[in-house]
Length: 570
Image 1: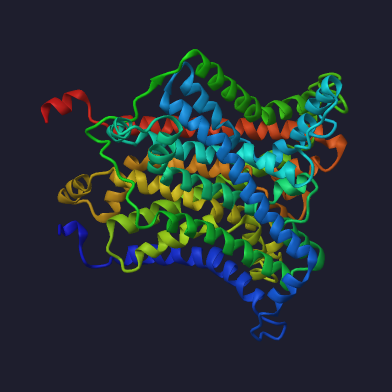
Image 2: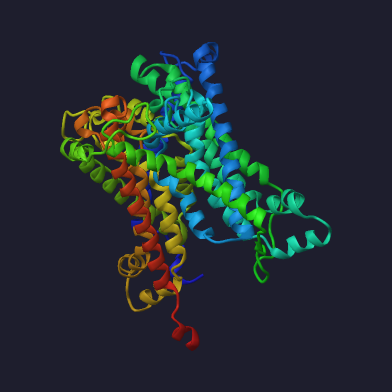
């Protein structure tokens, strides 16, 4: 072991670890623990399971539970129907535009589902563009946006890229020699896919499908925007906001939501446990791309065109709605105007500036915490350091509404230091909620960046007299800058469209960010135009941030790759 990894624990690192742990305990562990505690105690503090019994004795709550489970499973199923053929076609067969198709297939992730939900109603609803044309031409209509069907439809189109991205990577990593061996033994067509290719890519599919289930099960914005309240997330929101913060059933619902999120992630890991999906890809070749015949080409492009039309329909609908003078009972708007954008810039400048402030501060905190946790994990031998990573990553399984309820319960009656202003009435908790919810994203970027820095660079700095903290400041941080910036951008853009925590923590309109503003606008027919305009601005911001993160990561990777001259010297 080199002197750089001394067995001693410098007091500075211990202090940093304690500060990080205190932040995680105060704003994640304690609030979530408070939610669990409140679900299992009576008013006098005695333990009880009666609240769960009351939950399952109420018809509305039982219906909400099964509706949420049904919607999550159905959305996962339909997301799979969209994503699996798209991934297989673009990886398995050779045709023009495969890269563009894969890129367009990820576009839904830059638009929050609740933003496009109203536009989807105008396109696919009972009186939407598609049904008006179908009724006029064929005398039929499709109930795509009726009740729970609308939520399933919107969520499937929004979250299927999770399966597409993970499955695409898994398919690329399959060793082509295994396919050739299966073909030589007589497997072909559907049997080859079902018995060989898909089973080898199963880890990627399961990872994506579990994410879809968790995201849909916990979503609050889409049901509320579509006017559906008989689901768990809307019921938790209504119980706390209408009945009160002391209503035990709101906490029971929160515990059930966390439990099913953890259960879905555990089942996905359990499903793959004890099975070997490794291949000999390295040193071999990936799946051989095959040319399509004319019939296959027509079918493939037909399927892809239909998928992309559906994928882009929310974006097109929001754009049209933001420009429409009137759009009702007609396939297209009656006229077009920029007045909605003008209204947004006049009325909602505070929301835009609030979003920049909250998300900027939250992303900054995430990068600082992510860098500290990454360094403690990878460059020190502090006992229990791995727990910092586990606790931070646990935020992925905590729905935003549950975290917000925990904040409201935990910090009720707590004032800002030196003031008599209640913490729960300020924007500070909104910003902290964003930080806690997005910390896992920044942490992963920081860990990846530090893993790419060779320890010998730090040892070289130490050999010329630099102490540990000087080495961190002058060597490690500059080399991690690309990953840190990517983590900042990722946290920022994902926080900018957070609604589930926001809707619970905003106490006055002057503190509202863009996501809350979009929700408020969409509550009335007259506000849908400005709401769509604000949604377009949010999508543009997220798209620009996503592009910037890719550029940052690529430039950082290019700087860390050795030059041809250095490789020759080596």
